[in-house]
Image (cartoon, rainbow, N blue to C red; front, side, top):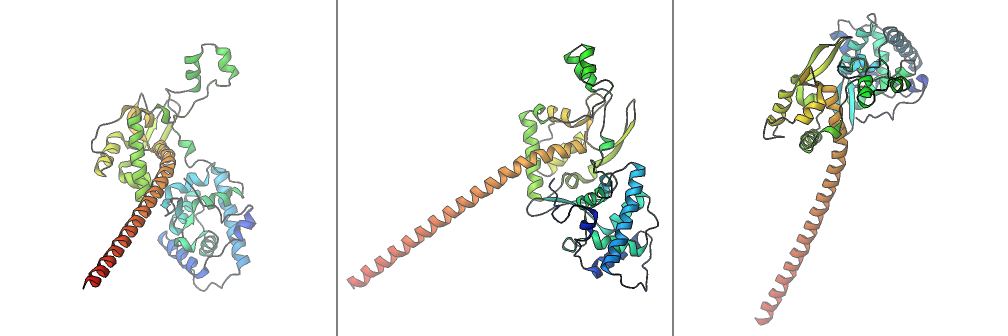
Length: 346
């Protein structure tokens, strides 16, 4: 996904100083959000100066950073589930947080005693009036990086690592020489399961392309399209327990048929094998994270093709309109000549 980071500058102080939002609108949105999570607006507060608001917001960011580092969590890991992907006319995608969602995420971090004035100052820095006072998740990530919280995949710690797939076992299939395995540094190193589009046959890729095109035209994110068909599943391995988003394989194909993307419910084996959670133990469910990434990869290519097709269609239409105009002009002149001939004969 593409994210707009043009408004974010390097350094916490510089980032905070880029605020241009309307204070009254943001404070109103913030207080409304605070009320929904059990807080009451503070009355009689004196207006704070810009510098004071920035100082208070910076203090909040420091508290958040400390709590995130103590818990070993990233901003994406906490706030992604509260965000909503928004696709814009230019087909860029931003993950947005509402003021209420931001406060819920902050509570999850462990900052339960956030005061109204602190919430208002955070919104003063983060909220975008042009996006209905929403907060751009990627901008929050960049700001927190300046306070020492490293960016990470939104749920990297939940990447499924099956017992059946390890770097060691794959190396052993190619070479039985243990010295080569140790030299490669692969001993006891597990590998998360990832898809490979090259292993999906032509028909399987065609299914993904059709779905990607449909989502691009409808300005939909895959998670929006599949909706409640996506569920959280606890999957245990010998080493640990994973909680990941999944969708049943049969529900995947059913949604495509309902949306008229495909006419049949016939499943594609190669597609199933690459997107399923585990080839040996969980072949009947897709790993949603891997499915979304595969669709994004396909969508990048399809978007380029669609833009070319739109340009060609536009050019063809212009040619047709030009030819039509020339034909109409010729017919008009022919009619004028005929009228002159008739008038001359009379």
